[in-house]
Image 1 (cartoon, rainbow, N blue to C red):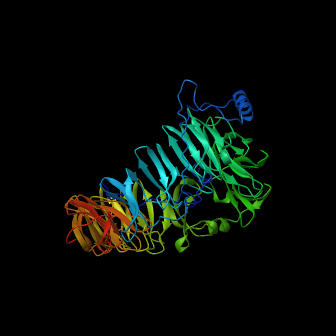
Image 2: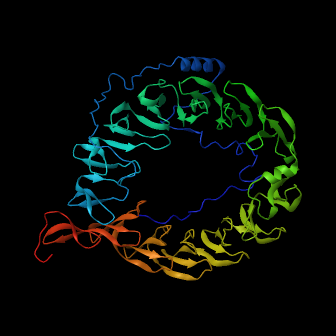
Image 3: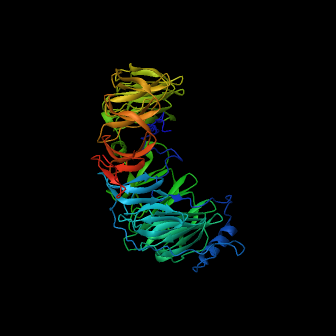
Amino acid sequence: MRAFPSNAQADPAPLRLLAPASRPAAPASRPAAPAFRVCAQASRPGARALRAGAAAVALAALAAASFAAPLAAAPRELVPAAPEVKGPGKAVPGEGAGYHYFRFGGRYGFVTSAGKVAIPPTFLSADNFVKQGVARASEATGTGLLDARGAWVVLPLLKDVRPEEGEGADGYVAVNYSWSGRLGPDAAWQVQPRFQALESLGHGYYAYGFRGKIGLIGPGGAFVTGLSFDKLGKVHPRPDGTFLMAFTLDGKEGILDQAGKVIISPRFDSISPGFDENGRYIMSVGDKYGVLDVSDRWIIEPKYFKIEWHEKEGRFWVMENKFITSYFYHDRDGKRIGPIPKEAVWADIEGRPLGLTGCFASEKPDVFGFCDKTGKDVIPHAYDAVWNFSAAAGLARVKKSSLYGYVDPKGKEVVPPSYDDAYDYDDSKRAVVMKAGAWGVLDETGKPVIPVELEAYPAPAGKNGYFVKKGGLWGIYSRDGKPVLAPELQETLPFREGTGLAWARKGGLWGLINESGKWQLKPVYDDIGPFTEGGLAPVILQGRFAVVDEKGATVARSVIECDREVIRDRSGAISWPPDFSCAGS
């Protein structure tokens, strides 16, 4: 059900050429732009090349896009009228965070952290409260949103409704039948539900989709463009109060303003975020990079291997080819002002424990070794890939002929390349390796402290141990390889920060263990759910619903008393129903 992941640790990028964060190899070195990358709103038709004539037609159509509300559905398609769903309740952000949903008599309500009933169990389904102060719940008529008093903020007349996420979000995305729309913070319709997709882009802007095409909606639900794009990116504010966003048309990226005007035409393979108040962007054309401003004027022509903007210096670092000697300074306006000293390039590279960083041979750009900050070769170029040194263990991971090993600062292969997979040393001087499908852990001398015979990746078990799998079962070993808990668990979940406890399953039942492998709460639960930020989790105990806290104490529990179902709270007193009476209870 919740099997612990066999490979929970992400593998960092190797130090190709210079360093993982600044390697100049194309195309992997294109400026990272996760914040401005275009996000898909609906499936895109097959991309076709924008020939000069086709591009002109497309841009003309884009410029003439109707700002009136477009018809989302063809006349022959029935789009049901949206019901009025504005409820009498008004959510207060943060309220209800200490509640947890509870199942009683086949219905759902909410209890407090003391196990008292806060909202009576009358709903067909329910979710926990979110930071906006609402919780999703459903009745026979549909789904809506409750406030912390149990009053409807959004009436239960929808197929689905959820609070928006992201900067500036204050409304709700709602689904009526299979059509998406938008409710304002007062739960009144701002965008009628007649779209196949609707997603917040931030600051009150939305992407709406129909039949594979995307359009833009502005604050208050006003239509900004028709269904003109394949994708739209998140909205980014400018110092003057205006907004820009990336868009994709036929596989190429461009930039729109908040009025839907094309500022930069769609002809680029990637666009980085603007780096100054003038709206200048690092663009890629094929595998070459340049800098363009919002007037569509090249500041730096797109002919370089790599471009970085250094805010503190107020200038660009431009790399003309793969070699370290090809870095040149360019000012804010793109003027070349001289070569960058080699030692400055090395000193700028991130993650240089022990003063060493990966570098390539000048005559063989695909063969790597290690250099100091002056660029002087320290460890010969003999590897297919190298990674940063571990400051704690004093070793660096290397790769040769598809096998992994570790070298020390003098170039000695402390662990010759012999493993099929390997990870960097962590702060406890341990590294996870894999060979022939079996996993183990090495110490700083390269010796296995946990033999390479485990059946799954040894994920961290708290601060000082590993979850290990042998014979089909999970246990815990210390970082020195000593058994803390013999493999006897069917499943485990990660230890929860702040509590030092983890859910574990044995004999088909769940309980809580501590980092010493002792049962904080014996395995008696049929099933468990995740903890909320308020520190409560749902469980099934002997077939009945309950809620426990982070220490395993029962907050609320459904039991049968005098042939009736009741809820007992944290103190053991009957919390629900209010009319319950039973002799001797």
